[in-house]
Length: 377
Image (cartoon, rainbow, N blue to C red; front, side, top):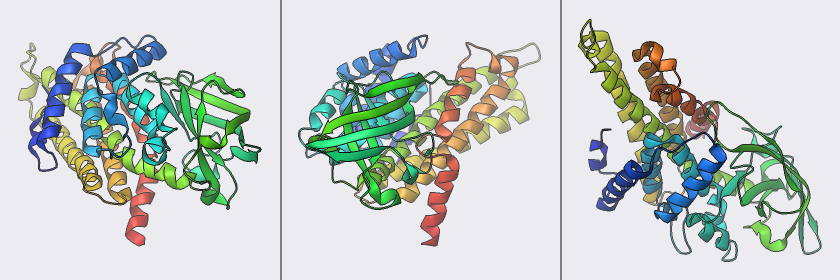
């Protein structure tokens, strides 16, 4: 059983501890799921998470605020039980993040559906020529009578191919670079929007390359004001980056549990945990996990306390937690010997799952830049 003593830290309130206990029971009854068909699994998970009431926490209803500690606790717990369940929950939040924070009442109809598990969301930000450099986005939205016409391509889009709606960042040209981007709500069945390629990755998740060829959208599809798309995207990431660290934390906790179980197993030569080198690895794993948890929940607590921006705290949380989780999982693989790289063993799956977290929602080197700039300004 993973360590839960961190719930007694002063970052949390009684409601967070109650939620964590309820979710733990739900996960024990519903997870893990079969990952053989990632699309079908994600659709089923969204439905189940919606029916269980967990997706209500993925976005803020009108007059509500996102509770980042709750988001982090949910992602950590889901990731510890099933990486695909974490993915399904997280993408509902990230996909509708701009609507949750800046959307109109009409646009929130989509949010109500994603929070109920009745629709699947996607966040179309990354482009073939603009990954970490969002300001270089080339997808264009031009004004037409009564609305906008969007043309361009997006790639590595989570839930691509299964989403019902996307938030798309496109260039509207109010100013050069970042200040000329806007955010749009685009239904997946909009004429002109197509899936060019489904992208297969080492830990199966629904990903796709999308193409928009003259997709016409009404004026009401614009989220917020024209020219504020970059600011909105960065605000969304500010809210959700700590939760990526939380997911990494969940993976790391599972890896430590697997390592402890392996180390305690009797062998002809004795119990593995009797070796001081093994004890040293286990101690390092526990240390990295607690340090990551402190950074993740410090960032979440700061935002929940009303901090306007937590760019530095969120970057620290995501950077350290994802890098530390990679190291913890690698140690767990090492302690398993040959079984550590054998299909069907949890640590082998974790080894594949963790790698993407050091890239998406801002690669580790991007987080280093964010932290450094916060020190130099």
